[in-house]
Image (cartoon, rainbow, N blue to C red; front, top):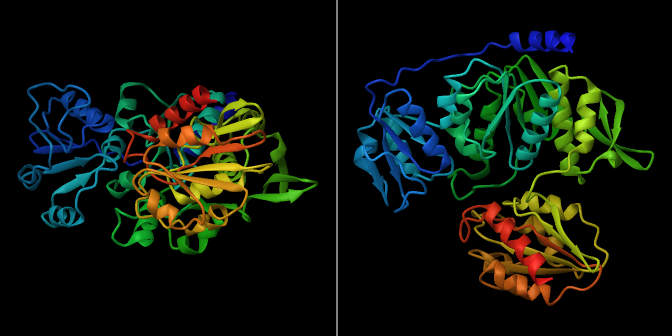
Length: 453
């Protein structure tokens, strides 16, 4: 173990870490968004003796804040924004594009909580983004590193505000980043950076659609020491000036090949692990394992540690999770599938023995559902649609069951299923039209599945 720490410290110390201990004193600072990220930003500044202004478009606070903090609720206070010197914007909060451009043109700095965090830490950062799989990779990588004896800080888009990590000592950070967070992050120098995959998501937010969305995702590679790159996108990324490129996918340094009646994880053309030994299934999950193993190998973590954690890992809550089995009927909660490509990956992983009851719906974010057409018009699949964009999805189906809410649909599903059927909630949409989060949506599905059947 001593040799392991010595070897790994060489990897860490070879990375140039930019530390900017910023001075925010006497600055006119505005925080937009008072969810868990915004609240962590308030705490960050108050600990430094700075009182920011705060804005939230909701009319009520989710948690009380000190009454001496200037607070504007129910709308965007443009006067505050245009007089600000620094704006911290919470991930997912959608300011009008024209307003953002105007603020930027006036040299008003707009940053994320991630940027605040990066300016404060001097330990290595592993940065992970992608349309799908980033939470799985973040969780699996952190488990592997912890098992190797490191004190690991895990945060970001996974649900733990990164600024809360500043309150404790960590040797290394594993940070999940959304496109919203990357858009307003400028100083990231990750020791390892990865984009798991790119597919249409948040197309309602980006004027230039997929081109803009993907370019923001690729920002994670700027100044990274090691870039782990999906071979599908490698040609687009050759212009990144990095010391090391490591590839994964259908080909590359880390790949999946079919051999001896099984998919195998192969590293530099050497068989490493049969996918039959994994608890998580599906090609998308096999790619998540490739990425995790690549990160562990860069850190010089012994393979036996990595493989033992990988084989024991059973996945995340609300991500293709079997939550109920009764009368030979399987109920699967995949509420975390908030875009089309994630739902497509889930469907590709299912073997249908009788009928599949597929539940879709929510806020589509202007997504294109055509990649799901083979499943939307399959005689063995019954499609159910609910929520804001149910009619948009239904227009692609020959036969569909419609309802306003998930609860209404669940009563219909429960009365229709028979033995050997599978019920899959994989909405391909955001949950925000009817729920606080995909977690609340998945919890309702789980509760109803167990109650109604």
